[in-house]
Image (tube, rainbow, N blue to C red; front, side, top):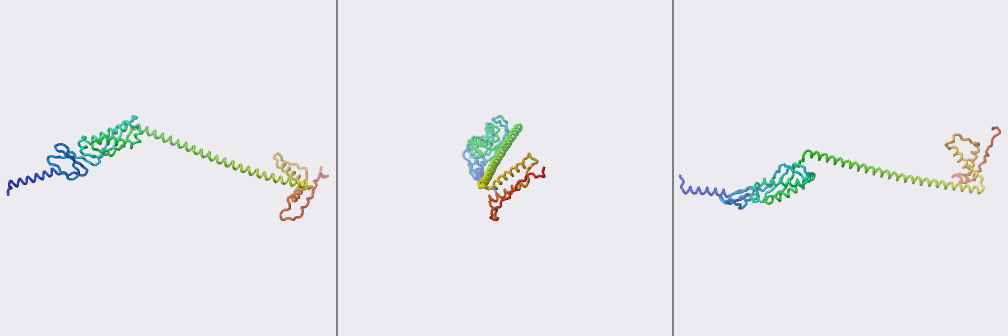
Length: 331
């Protein structure tokens, strides 16, 4: 059955409505913002989800990625403040916070951020010495982040991090640094060795000092003991002499014999132990010495009393043995 004109018009109207709906309905994915332009002029921003625009009047302008993105900074030559040439590369992280500003304030956003980061790397690293450059990467990263973030702020961009990846000095400079590091380590080793030797000498001196002090104290104690022994010996000799003197005063002849016999034996001892004497000529008989010793024993019994357990009878007088003169048959 052929369609009438009214039916054709209805079909065309339905198709046009469907096309208008498809043209006016926009689905925005998560993490993106779309700008809407009406006759070429920015009007509003479409957020993630289902959005409606005026078909054939409004159109989608820039599709901006609102997620954090990575910008790889290629290697470039940098001249430091002390005229050392180094090669450095970096990586930057940024995020679009304002889609209209990022879309309409700068052309080719990624290229602009790349050149901005490269120029600031040369500026910041060029104001530092090589040693400071190699040892203060955190300070370099902080300065770069502050400078680049401040420059990109009018574009609606937030620089979240700037990191220096590699700093490569020339090979001859690396060799010089290695020699310098080796010399510094050898210097520290020598200093530590010298300090160890000094401490060892100090400890040895302290030990010798303590040994000398202990030796002096031992010598002093020995001298004190020796002096005390001599003092006691002298007291004993004085007491013995006093007792002999009292015996002599009381008229005891044996005391005199004891005193003479003691000196007699001491003289014989001195003669016998002399180093320069080899032969001793004794012009007396042995019985004389025996008689003297007998007198000494008797006197000792009288002076010091009987030995413990002995009888209490008075000691017997020793028989005086007259010293024998030369016999008639001797020449």
